Amino acid sequence: MRKSAISSQGTSNLVRLSQLRATAGPGPVLILTHDNPDPDALASGKALATLLSRAWHIPSRLAYSGTVARADNRSVLKHLTPEWEHQDLLNDLDRYSAVALVDTQPGAGNNRLPSIFVPHIAIDHHHPIRETIGTVKYTDIQPEVGSTVTLLYEYLEMAEIDIDPVLATAMFYGLKTDTRGLSRGASPADESAYIKLLSHLDHKLLVSVEFAGLDRDYFRALNQGLGVAWLFGRAIVARLGKLKWPDQCAEIADVLIRFEDAHAVLCQGEHDGILNLSMRTKFMEEDAGQLVQRVVVSPGKAGGHGSMAGGQVPLVGTTADQMMEEIETRFLKAVHEEGEGELLL
Picture (tube, one colour):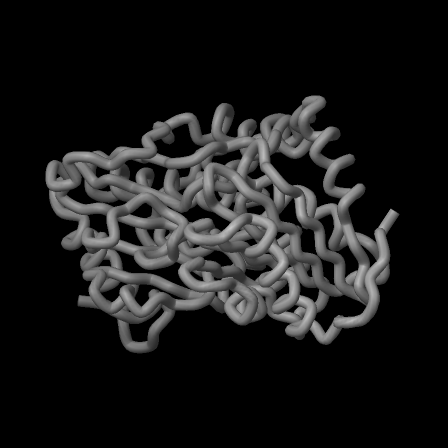
C-alpha cells in the first residue's frame, strides 16, 4: 500500500496506476472535495473520474458540498464540470467500492466526510500533511506542487489518456488560478502541465470562464470589504462581518493583496456559525500555508500553499467579533506589524 507521493523514487508508473486501480475497486467510486470548491478542486475531481472510467471502466460519482458562489467558479461548474452534484449530507457510504478525496485531506476540517470514516484515496497538494493521512490506503500528497490538477494530469499522462478540450480547459483554468498563472508556488511539474494543456484548450470556453459576468452582490461585497480594510504597516486586515457566501473572504483578499505596499492580507467573516478566513501573501518567503497554522485558533482548521491559505473556525462559546479580534492579533504579531493602523481608504 503506497503511502508516499507519486514522485517517490523507485516506484514505476505502472505500479502506481496498478495500486490506484486496486484501491478503487470495481466501483462506483465516490469522489469528494472540499467545501465551496474552487476550479482546481472541480477540475481535479473530473480528471480523476475520467481516469477511472477511461483507463479501467470504473464508474464514479462526483459530489460537492457548500456553495459555488464566485462568478468564475460557477462558470467552471456549469460549462466545464457539470458532472458534479451538490450534496451536503453524505449517506450510504458503504455502497461505494471506494471514497476518494481530491484537493483536501481527511482531518482538514473543510470537507463533509464524517471524521470516523477513513477514505480509501486522497490526492492533494495542500500544506500541512494531516496526521490522519497515514490511515488512508492510497495517498498522493505533494505540497511542493502548485495545484492538485497537476497531479491528476500526471495520472492521465501515465495512463496515456487523451484529454478532451472541455476537460483540458477545466484543468488549465484550475492550474492557472491556483498558481496565479505560474507566478505563485508553481513547480516544474506545474509548468510542464500548463504548457501541455495549452494545445488542448477550447479557447472560447476559457474566455467565457475568465470573464464571467459579475452581479451586483459582488460589487456590494467589494465595496464593503474595501470600506472595512485596515492597513498596519505592510499588512491589511478586514473584518467582513456576516458573509453572503463563504468564499467572499477569498474574493476580497485577492483584491487587497494587489495593494502596492501590502505583503500580507487577512480577511475574516461569519457564515452559518463558522468563522471563515482567507490569507494572502505577496512574496514566496512569506508562506501563507505555514503562516495560517500559527494564526488559526483551536478548534479551527486551516491549510494552504505558497501565497494563499484559508481556514474555518466553529463559533462555539465565543462571538464572531471576539474570535476575529484574537486571530487578527495573532496575524499581525506573526507578520511583525503591531503598530497603529489606519483605514485603507
